[in-house]
Image (cartoon, rainbow, N blue to C red):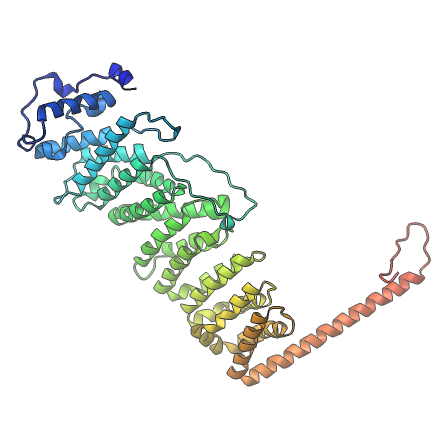
Length: 490
């Protein structure tokens, strides 16, 4: 491999064509300076194209050059790091490009150390352009599709995470990017020409990486980019909203929803009051629909935190959030229903009595259905709502409307539910209501008995009607193609 490269590229950089300049004072004490410099030059020119290393030797250390040459050395090292290697071939014994990979890794480490120096460098526009190009070359790539079965729920799949074989280089590039966007000496107005909308879109696409280490790095980088480039903030919010739309309504496949929500949890906490209409639309159009996918359990904790941040900022949004939750309430997925009840409790803790009144009828109808669920975990989780003092206070203030809705579900549980734990919790809630307002409780009980009597009467009437139809059909003579009613007792 090295012989082939040697035949293609010059053995010495363009700087070596003339007489060697005298070494800087800082390099005078280095171990064999002449031999070391010559060896470094020959290796770098043999491994990387001359166009990348022209101007100044890229493998020199920053402490070995003068202050005026450090910018040129930085650009040369960054250009050297634009070469991307293939790490996918893991065949035993195949260590192709090992020397080149080590050289690039060493260059990345030196660039990170240079940015971490006590006095951060002041970046010029050529330096920003070069480092932005290097980030794009190394990070922005297309992920190979990994098809999952759409029939099974992802929340039940325990798949091993996929780790990128090139992580030894990618991690250093991410560290360098994080250092870059965090520099206090970086002029955001100049850098935004290169960290532009196209760069941000490609950065957001990387959140679909299957490597959790990469998504963790991206989370920190996006947060710093959002804080550094104020001019890009509306675009970032819009782009992330589009990712959420596509995930919720089209693909239901994305690896980085939890990480994006975690970033936006801190973004939402920084929204100024009163909330802009744009921010409220983000809640309604982007966050609430994320309850729709069946994989909501993978990111529900982060989603609940984001919604809670909105309610802390503006409690009047509670009724809007509850309506959205009821809109996407699961009907056939008991596990998801338990999670929704947990989130509902957190929402109700931030809800005032006035906001509850706007949605209490459909809300407690849904809670009543949960109380009668044959899945004991759903019924149990719904009954746990009465263990929350704030929710009990809200119910007490609106008991005239809520108890008539809930009472039939409580009575049916006491008579028919199979699970003893649910039965005990139901009796406790029933006792709570009877002590809260005995007169209203008796009225609801009488009304329930009347409704049950009417239902029993209607059932009996329906049974008699069918018996009459069976008797009439039994005496009717059969002829031709006349259908015959076969009695169940025949």
